[in-house]
Structures are given as C-alpha cells and as structure tokens.
Length: 410
Image (tube, rainbow, N blue to C red; front, side, top):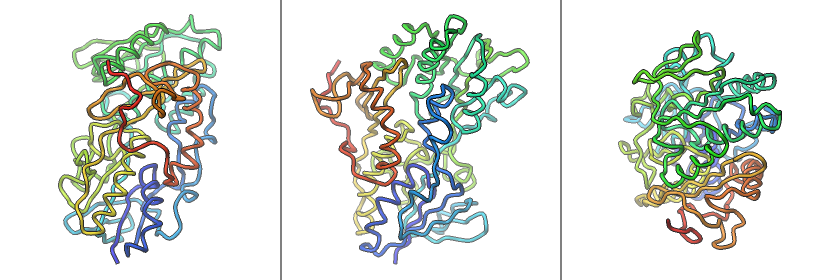
C-alpha cells in the first residue's frame, strides 16, 4: 500500500484530502493528514470583522468537520521533513514514512522581521488584520476611534490575498462615512509596488478608485523600521510617514518547518514547478497553496484551481505516469469596494485582469474590472460556497485554467 501524507489541514490541504479520499482504495493508497490546530478560519472573512460585518464566530469552525472519513488525521506539530529519507518527523518524535508528500503548510505574517513593529504600539495603535488576535484587537480600537491619520502599509511582496489591503481601505472609507467621521480621517495606502496592484491595467483602474475615494497612494515605499514612540514608519531610503493608526500587512513567510527542513527560499517558500506543482528538488513531493514560491496570488481561489490540477497529477503519479503542466496561475478575486458594491478580477501568469463578463461570456452575472452590486453579492455569497463546497472538494462550474471567452482585450 502506498503512503500519501498531506502536511497542513487548512484550505489547500483539506481540499486535497477531500478530493483524494474517495479514490484512495482504488489506488491502494493510505492517506494521512497532519495539522496542529483544531480550528479552521475562513480567512477572507477577517477583512469584515473590523467593520462589524462579520464576528469571529462567523469565520471559524472545527477542522474535523471538513476532513473526510477513511483517512488518518494526526493533530500534531511537525518538527522536520526529512526529504532524503521520505520521512516526516512529528513534534512527538514519531516518524511518518511516505511515498508521496503534499505540502500545504501555508504562510504566516512575520512582524518580527520589521524593526520596531512589535514594540510598544503593537495591538495598541499598530494592528494586522491577517490573524484572529490582530483583527479582533483592531475591531475594538476602531469601534471608539474618533479620527486621525490611518496608514495601511504593505511591507513587502508576496502577501496572502494581494487585494485584501485595497479592500481594507475601500471598506474603511465606507465605514467612516457611515459613522459620519470620514472628514476626520486621512487614509494613506502605502505600498512597495509602483502602483495600487501587481498588474498594470488593474493597477490603473484601482488607482483611480483610490483617488475617487480620497485615499492617498504612496508607492515604492519599502519599509525598514517602525518608531512607535514617534508614530512613524521609515523606508530604506529614509522617507518617513506619520500615522495615528497603522494597519500593517507585515512580511509574509512560509512555515518554520520548511526552514528547519532546508526546503525553502529566504522566505521559507518552497521552489515549485509553476505548472505541475511538483517540487523542483524532489519528484515525490508536491506543493500547493501559500506554501509555494510561485508567481501566482496566494489566495483561496488559486489554491482551488491548483487542487484541481494537483488531484489529476497525483493520480497520474500513482499510475506510474508523469504529472502534466496544466496549472496556468489562474486567480479569481472579488474585491469589496464599499457601499454595497464590488469588483471582480480574473487573470493568470500571462494575462492580466481584463474587462468582460464572468463566468458566462457576455452574460455574467458578474462583471470583470467593473464595480457592481452583483459583484458585492458574489463576494458575500462566497463564504457559503467556501464552507459547503470548496473545502469539501466539490466540483465547481469554473475551470482550473483561465478562459479568455467574455474578456475584452485592451
């Protein structure tokens, strides 16, 4: 019997377990999933907690509710992946042997990488919104904040869900307007990128939104340190920006176990073939989700499209065949823009976001690179899709590969 081990029971790992479990017996395969946390968080929902749209209870459920029957689940930390011996060492010291390994250990924020970030201001007037603790502390702060200068800063790329910081400032604009204090709040969006987003057409479109909403854009700002005593952030070229409230998207890094195992780059992301999702260094290791070093977005939709491709490739390998290079970097992201509207972008490695209709060409009901109420409802409906379909590995009516039908070339 072949042994297939999945490391990580978050979005990507859970989807893979649910896709592979029904065919495990047919392929004479035993599946073991390892994860150290019992709670699954719907991470796109963190964005809504500071603005009282969701509560913490709306975005968390027990992980075991989503694991399929018929697999072995080990709730444990991971000490090391010993790739040369096809073994995983758990925190308890137990060794797991594997024939195939799927690494889906995700990414985490690393505020400790920025000098002064976790100093006296941390979770007082400096907050992240990528962790449960950070977003709950930020919600408490915003509830009674009377105004001032709010700076939203991306430390460096890549980050989990690249559109989330933009969504945050758009929702903040709406939130402060609803509370009647928008004229008392100065919002500045500070990014290391040359524009509002990673792709030129979308960057221009979203930059115009920032301007329309009176949100100041500061580009090519590479943060070097935070001085909490002065409420200032500094760049490596010694530019400085003052803040009353700093909302940070710190450096994102892969899991520490990747560093301990010598499998990652400087940020602990694993060198991965961008089309097959196979490790560049070990033929029997595959990587998906935020754990990869791919030039695709670290987002749930990308993990879903990767999982569709990886499922087929794992079956090919179990049959003694080579994996096929079918992942094209496809990403599909709703961007909440505030006031009950949203934007949708759909792109891949080679094609940047373009206007059009999605998923049905010429029909929609969603509109690409356009602000509509339907896109907002697509974003809000996705939570149900996530819990009830996506995590369970269900087939969705969207192909893993991006389709040009319905898009208008610029």
